[in-house]
Every structure is written in C-alpha cells, then in structure tokens.
Length: 428
Image 1: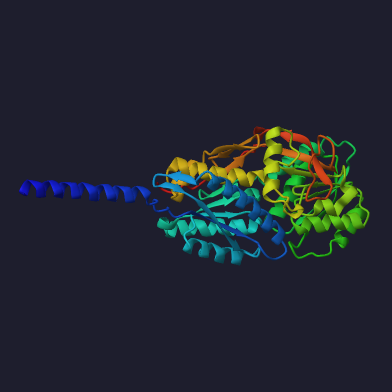
Image 2 (image 1 turned 180 degrees about the vertical axis):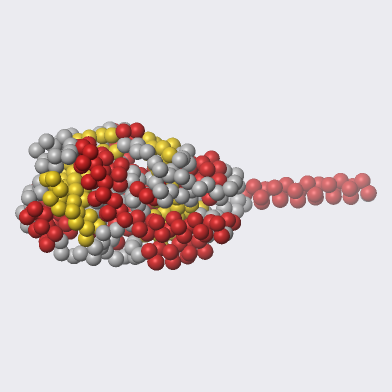
C-alpha cells in the first residue's frame, strides 16, 4: 500500500509539472516596453506643413523598423514608438515639450525645423543630462543646419544627420561657378541663425570661386511672419540681379518664389529647399530651367534602388500633398536602430558611443557619422527644375507636373569640410 501511494504521488507530481510547462509554453512572453522617440516640431503655425512632412517621414521609418520586430536588446526585441510634441515653432514651447517628453520616458529627441530651436534644445539637454544622469536623452537632428551646431557649439549629446549650411552651399557654388553668364546675384534669407549663416557663407564662397560676380542685394526678413513677398520680389527684379541665392524654407520659400513669378522676375533661384512644399507649383513654367535645389537625395536620382525606394513611399502615402520624402530621416532612424542593437540597450550614453561610428545605407546611398563632431557625411545632389517626362524626370513634385533633374552628384568626401569642434565628452 505504501509503495502504491508513493508511485501515485510521483505520477501526480510529474503531471503537475507537465501541465505547468504546457501552460507556460503557450502563454506569450510579457512584451517589453517600447523605445520612446519624441518628435518636437512645429505642427501648427506658419510652418505646420513642414512639421507634418517630417512626421510622415519618421512614421514610415519607424514602421519599417517595427515590421522586422523592432530593435534587439539584451532583454529582447523592443518596438519603437514615435510621440509628437507641437513646439509651434517657438523655443519656449520646444523646451516645454522637452520636459514633457522626458517625464513620459523618452530617451531620444528628434527635431530639425529651426536651428534656433535646436540650439535651445542642445543646451537644455546638456544641462538635463548633467543634472539627471539616470534619465539622459540623446538629440537626433534631421534638418537644423546652422554650421555652429557641429562646429564651435558641438555637443556629445547632439547628432546631425543633415548636411550643414556650408556643405550645402559648397555644392550649390560648384554648379554656380560654371555659369559664366552669371554676373550678379541677390542674397535673401530668414533673419535667424541659419538664414544669417547662409548669406554669410554665400559671400565667402562667391569671393573665393566667382569674385567677378556682383552682389546686387543682401537682405534678411522676419522668419515666418511675411505673408506678402511682393515688395521683396520687386526689389530683386529692380536690382537687376540675374539670380537669387536663398536658404528659405517652408512658406517663406514658396511665398517668395510665387511673388517673384507675379512680378515677372526671370532670374535663377539657387536654393536649399526649392524642390518641394509648394515651391515648384508656385513657380510653374517660370521655374523650369531656373530653380536649382540641393539635397542628400531627390526622387529622380538615377538607379533602380532609388526608384524602388521612392515608389515604396508613394504606396504608403498616396496623396500628392504628402509627397516629400527625405532619405536622411530614414538613414537617421536606421542608424539609431543599429546603434541600439550594437549597444544591446537603449541607455543614451551606450547608444551614443555606437552612434558616433554608425554607417548605414539605403536606396543605393551610404552615409557615415563623423565621431569628432557628430556631423553625418553623405553624398549630395544638385538638381534643376524641369517638366515631368523622359528618363531624367520620371517623378514630379506634389502632383505639380514639375520635377527636378539631377545635374550634379557629389560624393560624401567632396563636401566633407573641416571642423573646429572641441567636444567636451562626459566621463564614462
């Protein structure tokens, strides 16, 4: 009887263990919390359209990472989640958004539209990380291109994935210097750090590359507050300038080029951002063969990989008004994902040490972060506005019927400029 009881007890115990194993095997693992990315951008106000364009780009980038299961860490796979905060384009609102994002658990802050806001965020993040090292954050910059941010104001916690203004200007000037008929230009820009740096560098490079060109006008205007650019366009036309050089973006650019068309100005526009957000439609035929733009990538960059990349975006966002794709933003999110996986964790210090040497590729293009100043190095293109059609202009912009034909491609090393950065690195 005792032997029978012991046998029964053993069988009962084995059954319980088997049942327990079976239940545990079928019970899904507890999902790890997502990695929080905080987009701090102007989603309302005069530049809301640029903020929405950024949001679409980053949503698409995050979706691609999550489609492959998220990022692998030592704890397991974690998905990315993008939370947006409306700065209304104002520095104080950006700071308020930063505090809210940190309180909500964000470890990575993304911003770009406005170098003034970027500078404020860099300073605030530096102070926060020193004060609360257990809640550090990294700043990923996709569009704030004031050179100072990776030059004299470089910061360990800040990484820039766009070419800065001097790099963009260098690309434009390599094209401009070949235009032997050009004898006078008008400089106009937004009156803040970025706009000022564009005009300053334009003068430096004109003196170096084309000292024969006369500067017919040099003007700054309030940022985001001018609704009627006709007086500015009239002055440009009256100056006799054969071309305009501008770093204007958003409505400050589209309103300017539309006003130039309305007053009958027939000169060229050498722009940083003339390839989208209403500018091509505003110029119409008047911009064909006259408006140039510089970027890290454009839809008509030659190559099957580039075409496939753009078509994938168009399948995700089908409305013509949603047509504004930035390759650098896709590379930025891929670099972050890569760095988290190499670090095996999301702690910002550990990720930063990997991000300093990140090298990523997409759509046939490869980019690499420069560790000395956290300035991303990547190829650039300059393109000329043209009517859609033919092998060189397969794609138009925002359904306008006008696209941009690539006329010059630069390797990353051709535009790599020296840095005066003396980075204060935190103690490890």
